[in-house]
Amino acid sequence: MNESPLASFLLPEGYRRPPVVAVLNEARIAGEARRYATRALSARLERRRTPYVAGPQARDLDPVLLVPGFLAGDYTLRFMAAALRKQGMRTYRSHIVANVGCTLDAAHLIEQRLEAIANKRGTRVQLVGHSLGGMLARGIAVRRPDLVSGIVTMGSPMLAPAAHHRALTAGLGGLIALSKVGVPRTMTVDCVGGPCARESFEESRQPVPADVAFTAIYSRRDGIVDWRACIDPTATAVEVRTSHVGMVMDPAVITAVTEALVRHRGAREETQSWVASA
Image (cartoon, rainbow, N blue to C red; front, side, top):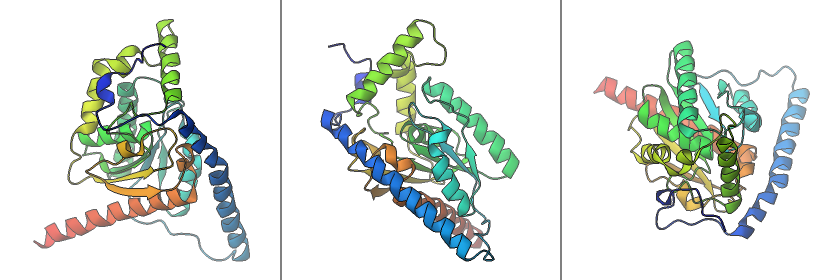
């Protein structure tokens, strides 16, 4: 068996890779997709029955940037983005076509998007990230709290990035092999086992600034990552009952994300009001 390219510090003591059979939990995505389709159809029929009722009014909420997970692109979060927009939120894509390159490069791209959105809207931005996307979001929030007002992570193993299924490690190995033969924008050994990996990991372990709200969504049914690694002690933890991949479309997760975004804004406004009256 080939030695894992992942650095040992990415799998701290107390965490483990999901067992091989755990990936079978991901078959739940069929039911999660069906629930999303059912809810979307129900909402569409309701709008047809009440054509003259105004839709949700745009609220004074922060803009939301959605960040996809490993091997994924913005398209995987289109259902969630559509649901958030129906709640009156402004959503933005990360411009990541496939999250397969160096994490530091991806973080730099997201940071540039945040700067553009914050300048356009005149306010800080909330980040919603799935899996690796959530880990990137947490790191950026530590580095640029001037741009980030809140983060919501979904199935993001921040405490132990290597606590993932062996099939995912095989995918990493394939990307490293491609980089060795000159394929651009793929992960190198340094990205998962060298200084680059350590820098990303250490940044993701630093305390999130007090004025950046943080919600971590996790599932004990996750077949891809160790759910315990997704519960950051500095975050408000929210448990759901979905597969790892299905988090991007399950109605219960979408509701949890929506509630977290609204709660984050409400908490900040309450703090600002208290400071102003003090």
